[in-house]
Length: 216
Image (tube, rainbow, N blue to C red; front, top):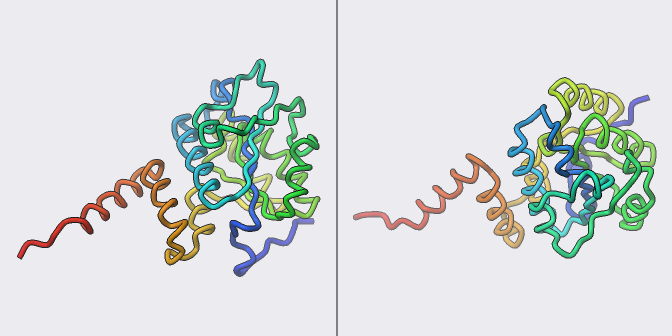
C-alpha cells in the first residue's frame, strides 16, 4: 500500500525538521553517469549542500568503498571541510547504522536524499526509510543513473511507494518560504548567484539595476 503523502503546509519542507543525506558522489560513479551531464549534477549537489549549511540543516556525507571508488568530490568536501564522510560497504545506506543512528538521533522526520546512482544507492534507502516513518524526498536533479531510463524508472518506482521527487532549487524555496526571513535570504542569494544558472544571472542583473542611479 502506498504511503499517504502529506499535503498542506505539512507537506512542504521545513529547515528545522529536515536532514540531508548525500550518497556516493564519487569519481567511480561519475565515470558511468549517463542520465545527466555530470557538471550539472556537480553544480546542483554542491548548491544543495551550501543551502543546507545556510539553513543549518544537518547533512551527512557518505561514500561506498572510497579506497577504490574514490573520495567524495572536492566541491562537497569543501562545504563541510571538517566532516569525514561515512565510508560504507553496504550498497544500501539505510542498512548502515553509522548513518541511520545519526538520522534517528536528530529527531528529524523529513529525510532528503541525493546520490549516485538513482536506481541503486538512492532508491534502496528511500524505499526502506519510508517504512521507518520518514517523509522521504529525493532531489532528482542532484542524482543520476547509468542511463536516462535507469534514472527515470527509479524515480517512478520511488514515487509509486510514496517518495516525493523534488529539484534542488525547489528545496531551497521551501526552506526559505518567506523573503522577509532576511538572515537566510542573504545566504540563499549567494547560493543562487553561484549555482543557480540563469536564475543567478537574473538575480545579478536585478542587483545591478537596484544599484544603478536613475538618470534625471
